[in-house]
Length: 81
Image (cartoon, rainbow, N blue to C red):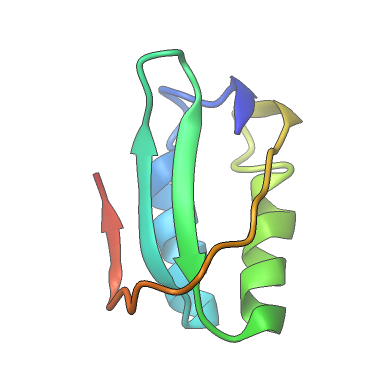
């Protein structure tokens, strides 16, 4: 996620949304001021989480979200890194 996405509770909000939708994976701040995440689960649930990421929490200003599809790595639970 690109924009004003660090220091605005983006990772914790993402964790809460992932748990709400039953999505596994992780989210972390990157040194470039962006946020990276991996989501695994039901495709509709993953898409719902990606949609949430396009706006993020109230304090965030998301400029754009880059997505790629990868093979699952059998993530369990959801971690804030």
